[in-house]
Amino acid sequence: MRNYLEIHAADQASERLELASRLAFVTRGGRKVALPARDCPSELHLLEVEATPAGAQVCIPQGAPGGFAMDGQTQRSAVVPWGSEVFWEGVRLAFVQIARSKERSPVVLLGLVGILLCGGFVVAGKAGHDSASNEPEPPQLTATPGTCPAGDAETAQRRARLAERTGLARREQSAFVAADALAALTAFGEAEACYRIAGQSDDADRAAALGRDWSAHLNADYAASRLRLQRALVQERDAEALTAATELGRLLAGRSGPYVDWLAALRAELEGRLRRAGS
Image (cartoon, rainbow, N blue to C red; front, side, top):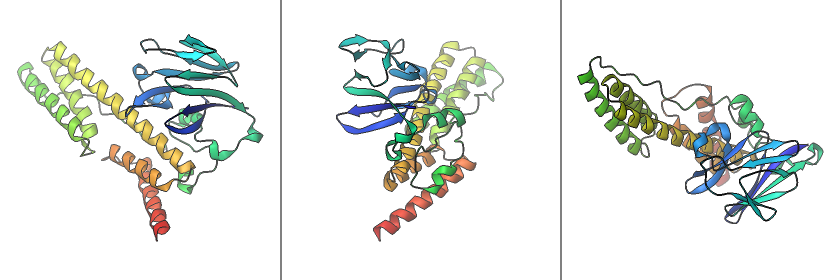
């Protein structure tokens, strides 16, 4: 038997995700999306689900608002038996078990267990592209630890202020220049380090908070783009897959390695398929 979460919302197509480990709902672009819990900071979680032998453990994390409806009652934590459902924020969440012999691969969008075991995305069921089955492990989207090149307090203070302004500017420019996304994160780290050398702990804490918030934003976008790519590949939606692969390429601008090479090859493959389909 395999465990699945079915998501039914009025404004979008229904989805079925394999519930092989903990899943978290977060807000992205004004919509609530389901992501592997490890791929987004816990403070962003609005609702979490995890499979147990008796059913799905559903809970609203501490600090998150609201509750979900189950059997006519509002709850914040409950084990939902397999074959049952709950209602949360206008969305119906159904939890089902399906015998392996009865599974139909086109509706299996993603094997979440693969994400947690290898840190990347794997396709469950038949993928539309051979490249998808050869996907390497994606790199971590992090900046190097913040360092300050200044040795004395006065110079460190000047460097800190410049680095913080640079981080804010590059954060805004990252919508147009992809390489600025990680550069902003690095700048916030430098600002924090220099403020601490200058003995300005409040300013250092502010810079650290800017870095944490921006890192959370980047990694949530990163996880959502990887998930969107794999869903599109499974469903053979080439145009959507190309858009997601291009977004990932922008987020990883300036990086190198097997995953970046795989993305470039996949984009070329998708572009070729779309050209042939349009000719």
